Length: 250
Ligand SMILES: CC(C)(COP(=O)(O)OP(=O)(O)OC[C@H]1O[C@@H](n2cnc3c(N)ncnc32)[C@H](O)[C@@H]1OP(=O)(O)O)[C@@H](O)C(=O)NCCC(=O)NCCS
Image (cartoon, rainbow, N blue to C red):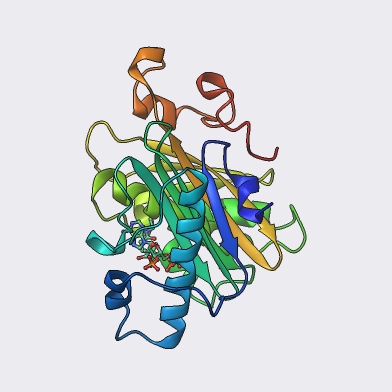
């Protein structure tokens, strides 16, 4: 079972890789996107696409090019949402049908402290205060890295939903030691977009992984608006969304 799967509900298909397979191939349109890139960039892009195609295959979507859209966001086939991440020694992708999920944000980082000075740039004062309180919570977890990773996954879920930039100061993330986090979104956004995101995090195999999955809300279920669902305290863990996370661990 892919490690990342522990963070995802059953409606989300995923694939991951810890090495780059020499046999992995790109469609010509994809290869053109990285034709001038470094070897490192070509390898992460290629394995990321390979993971994405494997995950799409689990949804029954046939292989096809996944091009890069506005501001770097992957362009998924119609009716599909997803997210890709890569860092040293790890690549992953997660996808779902748009009828089940509105947005996914995935991020992976090495589980090591952020370089000096970075935390001040990527966090708000209140987030730093909460990190300080977490420091004794679990040995071996670099909480500043978990925060950074969570914020990158916030952006990856936010951008496809809104088409807007989100700065590090525009989201307030609260990490819980139990493997969850919540994000208050502080930037102005289209009225239907969520006011908050619920996510999950995991430290495993030398990595920090974070995932945000914004569930789709079907009008016929009477469950309210997308903003209600994604913004509900504990969304994704119970309440109106009970059952949504049944595929995830814990
Ligand atoms: C885009 C960004 C989040 C990528 O994160 P990263 O840790 O550097 O890199 P990762 O390997 O994890 O992810 C890269 C993948 O993200 C995806 N991605 C890039 N831009 C994206 C966007 N605008 N929307 C959604 N996904 C995007 C792509 O699939 C990319 O891989 P690919 O180019 O091979 O397809 C980061 O570079 C960035 O610009 N951050 C600033 C914005 C931000 O994080 N704000 C914080 C809000 S709280």
